[in-house]
Length: 143
Image (cartoon, rainbow, N blue to C red; front, top):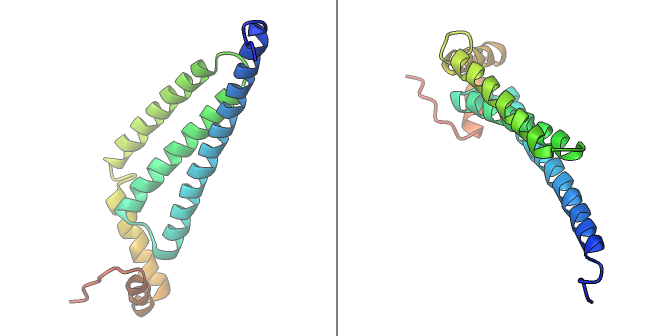
């Protein structure tokens, strides 16, 4: 086929294909980040928070924020890269605030994890807590 005769049609069809691809990739990123956040919250509700899970929730929350923002920018009309730039700035500012708060007693991951584990022991009892920890593959010293 001679594309030289219809250059406008080829460009338009390529542009539409790129727009569809852009929208589907952005929507997939929302699903992946939402799945990660769901898995972390489920694990935390069953076994309590740990320091790693606190940071994982921060990362999963940031990923969800960015993927939703990118999706909205990709689906919008006009300069979609400008929309993504605004999402990046807001995500960076939010992460600065969250990480700064994590360095204080307010959102300290160590305090949050200790409080969560204490509540798990208090609510379930020590024997049930240790059994859950053993099922999860965690070695707990009881000395």
